[in-house]
Image (cartoon, rainbow, N blue to C red; front, side, top):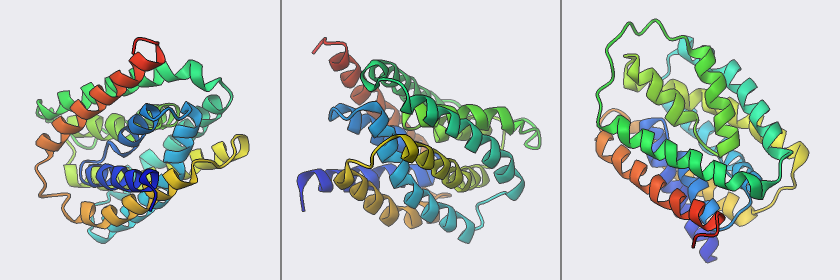
Length: 249
């Protein structure tokens, strides 16, 4: 087994455990490491999206099995999320990758800070029926494609802040993510060649192994501690990538 494949498996395993349990961080975690390895931004997002077709599919089925999906919320997220994701994937595929790397790294730093901030604040208790999820899903899908991650941090955290039950938010967001990811990957397919096969294979294998376990422990894992760790990790790795892209290190 090559070192690249082994690293990718471990990254995919860790990312999916967190994502399947907290509804966030698979894309941003994997993207941070791939950018740090010097992978072009468009190929980073493409590699993550291809792997997520499999990991989100298994994760969505697992959450359905454990009855963690709210059908109404899922439908509100799915279609606008797909539209936002296709738009973001199209724009990313037609811009020079090196020009986007500092901006994407900055975006990932913000996502890491946002995750850490959410870990230290309780959700605001409001009427859970007032979702207004369509604009949220459009934004989350677009940022997810452009940054190689962000669907979970943007959508999950906002819905939790509105007072939804975490179990159904995480399950519904994960289920919708399969369709959002599939649409992004198909868009990238028309503009980019399929590369980074060892990385993609490793991310798929690690994520698929972790997905069923993550769904099963969705209700019992101490979320705040993991969110703090993920937030710190993303900030540190993405800051390193940003400084290197700017020629500071």
